Length: 83
Image (tube, rainbow, N blue to C red; front, side):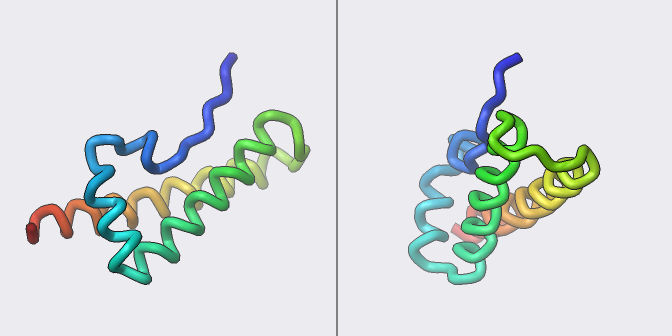
């Protein structure tokens, strides 16, 4: 099984212009984006065996990532609707 890193730009390529705009103009978005990318890297290390946490820790991190992605996507869609 191939383990893929879930970078936001790879996950939402059709929104790359909006993501770049928000990264340059919205500090709240940047903070959430940075947290998402940091968490994604941490989860990737866990899934590839670089770190070996319990299953509960890994699942908790994945739930956090989904919540962050939902928040980021909401900001992206709101921004796109306003343009």
